[in-house]
Amino acid sequence: MLPDVIRLKECDPSFVREVMEAGGQGVSACFACGTCVAGCPTVEAMDHPPRRLMRMINLGMREEVLASDTVWLCASCNTCNTRCPRGVEIPNVMAAVKSIAIREGVQPDERVAPVFYQEMVDSMVRYGRLFEPRMMLMVSLRSGQGVEGLMKNAPLGLELFKKGKLPLRPHRIKGTKQLKTILENIRTMEGGK
Ligand code: SF4
Ligand code: SF4
Image (cartoon, rainbow, N blue to C red; front, side):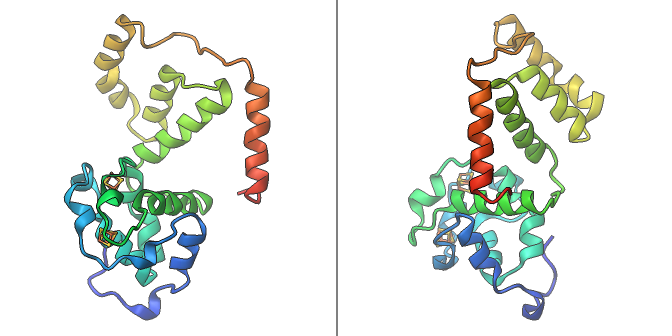
């Protein structure tokens, strides 16, 4: 939610640097032209369009930015940054905000996308690839969709199953141990975050 009045004394001027250090380099170059909004395929679902989110980051509206569902609904399609006249790598900015939100345990109102990301990573760590039935189950349960969500997705699941696209057992890659070691090393390099 955007407050009616933005009080600069309540903003965090160091936030923009924090985002840049997390991988969102270039966000400070944004001059709020709005070109990024024009071609964004998911903007209708976002609580803040990309232009506004860039502005909020630059103003230091840390709390509102981290609680926004925009970064979770960005599809990383790159339409915006190929058009941005200031060369802002918008998907990277979105990813940087996401990593800060995860690190701080901030839960946005939009629950499906964050849980989907977490379950996707969990599946990769466990099996080395996606195991869709478990993912669908866990996303429905953990995002609060419950049985209703499962029932909603059941027809799609059945179609996929009939086409042989929904295995009943996970197919593990051979090197799951090595994969775990690689991921642990990455976490260590990132300071255990
Ligand atoms: S297109 Fe680039 S400069 Fe324009 S609002 Fe979007 S991020 Fe900012
Ligand atoms: S990368 Fe994200 S913000 Fe940019 S156009 Fe695609 S969905 Fe929208």
